[in-house]
Structure formats: structure tokens, C-alpha cells
Image (cartoon, rainbow, N blue to C red; front, top):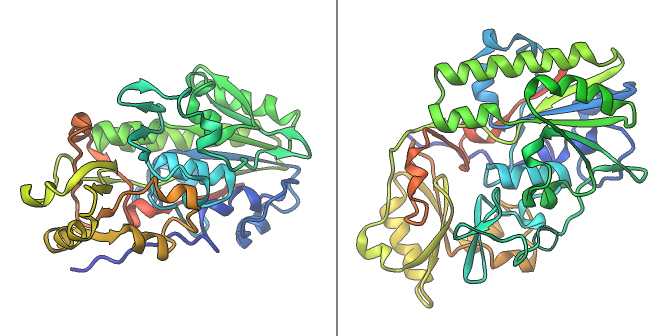
Length: 369
């Protein structure tokens, strides 16, 4: 059975257009999402809740567990490519695709090194000095309203991280110790801003550790309770909008890989299991592409760097960003992942994301009344 790719809709219903569609005085050039703009029209303020890791497919299957979210769904949006946190959250905050902002995946090449974005590390070493976040991600996040910083409510542990500096600079980070503090922090933040963002990561964490069964269901229900609590806490004329960065597939440790002879053409790998970049030894990129296509097409979409760039899968790719990509992309359409020997613990994950399937690419858009 051929599985259809879900491509990022950068010119229409994509997470890149969410913040710019809220009508709260932000200067933005991203395309508007018409039904979202209509739904929040007349609101005195907006709270945007970002539920990391909740795909629209997963929400639709759990309607009875999340009545608040399910009862307020608009048509879904697409994530970006790759459909992963580092790329997607940065596209949410900047309004541009990964090819523009440059955080093109969970791990990507910087010269001879590979940067792990969420922890901002190279080979388990902190890389904030050698690769300053403000230089690696140069697009200004769209998080100031007439010169005033937009509040962003999230875990205190993330407040000063390098990734926060990369994708949230210009905002006013409001750190909380736990989820129970989020509604009151949102209310307090609305006193000084017509827009407040609130980020909750529990769904994604549970999915990676436990898969998409009992604990995941509990996490979705708890997130629904959080949204309900925020809706109850804020004034009636403040709109509460909910979206996500990506969805999930539950595949456990099922993997697929190159033969040893084809792998001999690979100097290193980057990306992640559901969007794996292969970096060829000098002069061997064309052969690697040919071998990878012959061996992996049954389970993966196999694309050369040129094909990825020309297709605008990552949007328009800036010149300085092209070198962060590998030579060949392996993007699984089957329920498998492509491993990287440099990330030995990766096999411990149950659920994953990054590819172009509906389960990973479609995210919810809700306006909670």
C-alpha cells in the first residue's frame, strides 16, 4: 500500500501562520489562517496554548478523553518538515519554515560537528559558546507587540536554555514549577499583554517513553483539563487557542537500515529516526543516493539533498542553511525508524515523529469558547 505524503502547507494551513493570524498587533508577513482570524476577531486578548506532541489524528481518536479540545476543533494544520520539536516550535515563533530559520531538525550538521538542538550540545558537550544560538537561528521570533515582549509561560527549567534563546528571544519568559501554576501565570501575564503563549510538554514526553496507550491517554486528558482550567481562569472576552508542533507514531524499536556495503559510503548521520540524513564520504553522494533508493524505498521516501531543496519541503532554504543538510534523506513511511550509531539510546523510544505521515504532520487547531 502506498502511503501519501502530507506536505507542509507553508502558504496556507500551517503552524507558521498561527501567531500572525491572532490579530493582536504583531508585525508579520506570514499567510493568515482565515478561520482562525475570524474565530478570534473581537477578542480583547489571546492565549495560545502549545501542546507538544499532540497530533490531530491522536486527538480525533480520543475525543471522549478530551471533550474541551474535541469540541472546539477547527480544520487541522500541517506541521513543518521535519515534523519535530526543534524545527516546528521555531517555525511557530518566527512564522517562517525551517529552511529560513535554520533549525532544520533535532540534530544537524555545523561544519564537521553535529548539533543536538534541544540540549544545544555537540558530542555531549555544551555548544552555546562555540555555536551561539543567536547566530545559528538568525530570524527574529515574532514575539513583540509594539515593542513590548510577549509573555511565554513554560517550565522554569527551560527559561535560560540555549534553545529558548534560539527560538524565543524577544519574549518575556514566565517560568513555573509545575503545570498547576500555569493558569494563574497566564492570568497574571494577560495584565500586561494582549497575547500570552503557554507551552506544555507532557504529552510528547509520555509518548516517547510509553507509547500511545494508557499513559498517553491520561496525558491527553490532563492536557484537556489544563486547557479547561485556563479557559475558566481568563476573562470571557479573551480567546483561548490551542495547537501543537507535531503528532506521533508508535513504532517501538522497529528499525530499518542500509546494508553494510551501502553504509560504508556514509561518513556520518544527522537528523532523527523518522527523518534521517546520511552524509556521504567525499565524491560518493550520488552512489549513496542510488544505493539507498534501491535498498530503502519499500520503507522510506528517499530523497537527495537537491530534491529536498528543490521541492521546498523545508521551505526556501537559505544558502547558509544548505550545508546543514546531509546528502540523502531517509524519511520512513512504514512504522520503522532509521538508527544512528551516535545515538545509541534512541532505540528506547516508543513513539517517534519527524516524517511526512498524517499521524506526524497533522496538528490540531482549536478555539475554546
